[in-house]
Length: 102
Image (cartoon, rainbow, N blue to C red):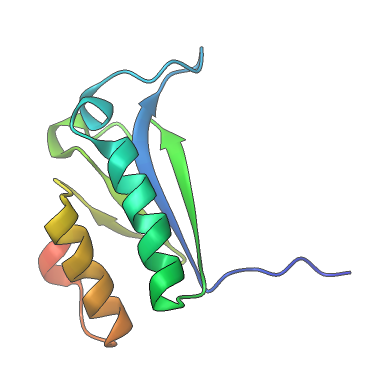
């Protein structure tokens, strides 16, 4: 039986280290709360997407950081408001480049 693959997969850095301990910029700037918000928003909006927390993405100066696949888009300095705006743009089929890391 084939595995159902979502249309999009979001990863939010939670600064997990090899030992599994959450440390670092993204974690201290509320990435855990953003992960929960994103998961809730995905369900509320009915988007075909998966949400995952991940280890350090190595762009700490831009934290919290989110990556969206398969598009390969990176978003930095994520806040609740910015996350909402990104999801609004995705939902409306609009360009998200104004929110992306360069």
